Length: 267
Figure 1 (cartoon, rainbow, N blue to C red):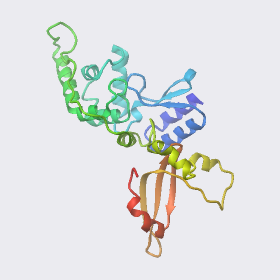
Figure 2 (cartoon, rainbow, N blue to C red):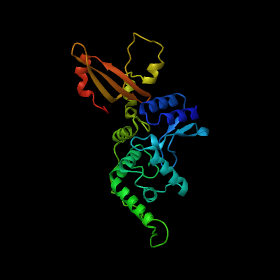
Figure 3 (spheres, one colour):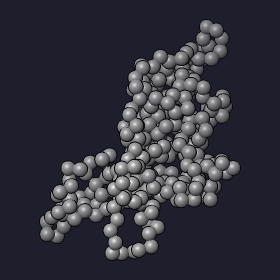
Figure 4 (cartoon, rainbow, N blue to C red):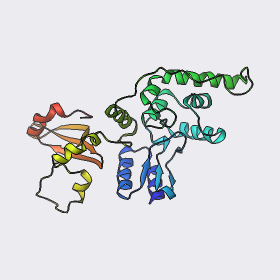
């Protein structure tokens, strides 16, 4: 199952909705999907069968691209693991890894092993990529620095700034990946949801009663699509996410009108 899920995810590497379906299937089979890691992930989905783990593909992060990630993996394999953000900047070609790709990799958690403060890396992206450009110019000119060998890009000085609070961090991760991987915004509300009698999407799917029963379910809103009905009234399809998966709810006109102020992505 581990290899099969990895191969299936690689086949659909550009389709976030399909990747999320496979992630849910992995969860059901007790296969761990590890977050992307600049020092461990490949450009495509890879496995550690002994640990029952699929490593998330670098190229599956939005706005990154397969060619750029093949370059990063080749640099890592040629020169060893990246030791720091400065080391990464000194070794990669900034023409391959642009600002958007770098920022989305950070948001997805790919640099957590080198710098766990994601907001700091995103807000210092220009400085980091300027260091990469300086190192690239040096390589092209064929010059070594004063002490012989290596790049003159020493440890980059990054502006000190606190990380995003957890809900923002997860929101940024969602934007870069299309679903929540390292955690879920509803995790913080576990006890409250239990008291309210809310069930998970997964348990609702497993329920053998197929019709005529009521259930209470919680979700973080992902997207909303409003339509106009035949009687000119608006109705909507709304996508939600909970820690066990994504689901869609149809809202009829009177419910839509009453709940419209609440229907914002992330709520």
